[in-house]
Image (cartoon, rainbow, N blue to C red; front, side, top):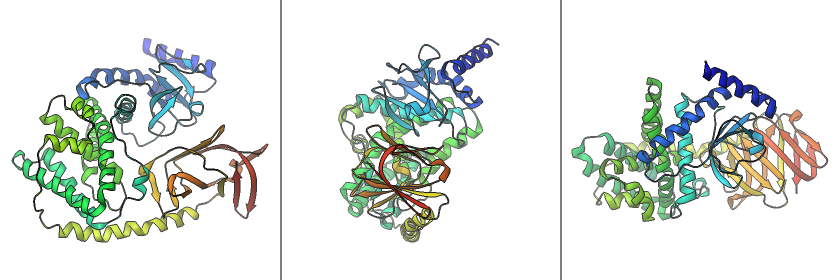
Length: 447
């Protein structure tokens, strides 16, 4: 009863203090946010010795944002407890599951207003993942992060796809298969990497290794949180699918490519934990990429690989289908309903964020974004979440010449030479110099 009274007190205080109404889902996550903080502090040293826990924020789009353990929260936040403040999500301009500077401090955040979470533990495991990234970026200065732009040009070669599928199956065998076959599988794993390097080259193999180096440890933390606090059958099913089946589920081309290397990195972390104590500190101090560190601890040699005719036959067929889908996806985008808006930039805007795992290079100059895109310039801003948007680029993803998307005509406003739109998926406020309407399309030149 005291808990209920406390929750009602917080709820009423929020309404009067900040002027926004909480939905039941907001209260549900707010009431478990403190438990998450205690859980993290209880397991962090067991999971990753030396890990420092930074600030975190949970939010719902167009709803509240709850900020915890932040050393310098903005003055417009509403204090709910000793270390938890409430803001409006729009005030912090948070999108997706990532890390963002809030008042000069990198902060992990996650959006609970999404229907796919099987439990609160899944949601908070992802937040723990992001907290590890905050730790990496704040304290581990030797760590090499991947360049997301390289994913967009990663070679779609069926030979590479075939060997990579076999390689991922070997990793799972090393973790869960017969111990007597570990050394043989280790040598095969090493040999697969050597062979794939000849196909895709140093640049793209190093891209994979950089993903593993930063994302592997973070995904390892996510897995360990789920393993520690999950208690239901549905959570165990999620663990098997998310962390193990997704590794060996056949995919081709660039589909799911980056996520695969989150998992290959995680498996290498699990194998290191099984054989070596306190390896985490040694790895971060080494300055090596995770895969290079892995092979410094597990000595492997190149051997002749078995025939992979079955893997190659499948890859040759399905990789070609994936390559053909790029133009099909662009055509489907151009046939979306609503008013077509094309924003043309006089100068390149500041590129503030995107989701590389859900961005597709249609060709050398067009990128199709599906989940996240953030641009800005001074007081001007553009944010897209969970809506398809095409950027025309110059050379690399960071240099945006134009943005195209579809939106209801009623959602577009022109106020004193400022383009304004605020929907669940698109938020824009940008000064424009010219607007031209041609049929069902606005072409708007921005400053």
